[in-house]
Structures are given as C-alpha cells and as structure tokens.
Image (cartoon, rainbow, N blue to C red; front, side, top):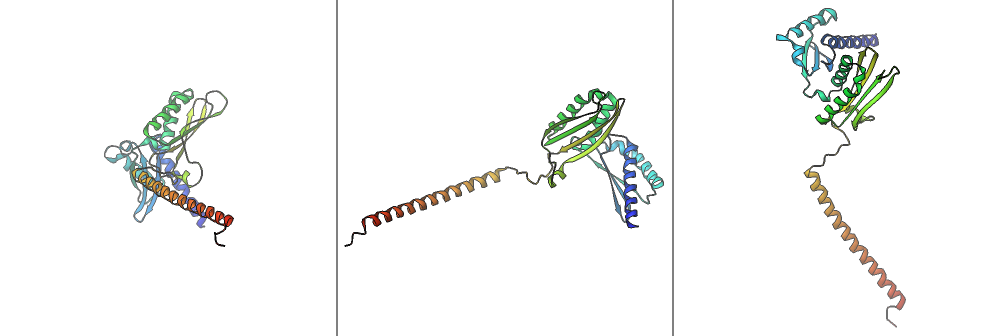
Length: 242
C-alpha cells in the first residue's frame, strides 16, 4: 500500500508540473518544484520572466491557485516565483528557445539557430555547452546533429553540476527532439584548481625549499663519494704503518 501511495504522489506531482508549464506556455518556465510544509503545499516556479507569470496585481497567480485547489485537490497551495537572472545558463530555457525557433521558422533554420544559441552562451561565459538535435533535419531521413564547445563532465559525481534538459519542437516535417547540456561558470567542479596569488606564492616557497633540499642532498652525496675514494686509496696503499 505504501508503494502505491508513493507512486500516486509522484504521478500527481508530475501532472502538476506539466500543467503549470502548459498553462504559461513553452519557453517561459524552467522548473517547477513542489515542497510540502505544515501549512500546505509550496510550489516554486523558476522563470526568467516573473512579470508574465505573476500578472497584473498577481491575478495569474490567484487563478492558478484556484485551479490547483479544484483540479488537483490541493488544500492550501502557495506559489513562489524564483527569478532566473542568467537564462543563458539554464538548459531548459535554452532548449525551449531553440524549439520555439524551429517551430516558427521551420527546421531548415536549425543550424543557424543552434550556432546563434551556442555563440550567445559562450559569450556569457559558460565553460561548456552541448546541443543535440534529432529528427528530419534537413532531409526526409531522420538524422542527429551535435553542436558543442568547451568541456562537459559526463560521468561520475562531477557530472551532476552539468545542467541538462530536453524539449520537443513540432514542425511541419515532424517532431524534432532537442537535448541541451550546459556547464555554467559558477559550477563547482571537484577537480578544478583555481590558480590565485596565494597559490603562486606557495608554489614559489615550495620550489625554494625543494632547491635547498636538493643542494643539501648533493653535498651529502659528494661527501660520501669522497669518503669512499679515500677508503679505496687507504685500502690500496695501506695505512703507512709497518
């Protein structure tokens, strides 16, 4: 019974997220998170256009709250808006932007649209980007295309810092799948080393210590060689005592 209840809750959460996205349209919302608090459900909507989501005097938020109560039987839903200040680093917004471009101008513009987004993200300072499109581009035969620059972490724990998203463009030639992966400049990479003034000073200090150590070892080595040489001479000629 617990398993069925868990699956049912997750199914309802998925339906709520999809409903919120469809309500405001493609390209306006990145993520929808649902949290449960003692006073009710908290729905966090991430968007780079909070004005369109809130509406004049919060009318759209009020309408959405009423729909969630009636359609999804939520007792006390509270909607919060999280503004995205850098949409260039949000994979979902980039994927939806490309999907809208292909739906508006057709699939023949997929290369120019992809390179435009790639250049925009790179100029914003991203460490790496990968855009994959698959479908009837540009011929009748389905193909896959990849546009990328920089580097991305694809395996291990470091891959979790890469923002990934998918979107779908419905064109006259058919459905085009879009996958986007972005490594933002603010992402904390475990194996990344920042070379600053403090590190440079420490490296110089370690280099001096290492040179002094090498000089000390060289003197010891030469002293040992001298002792062995003297010992050989003594063993060969005797100690001079008859």
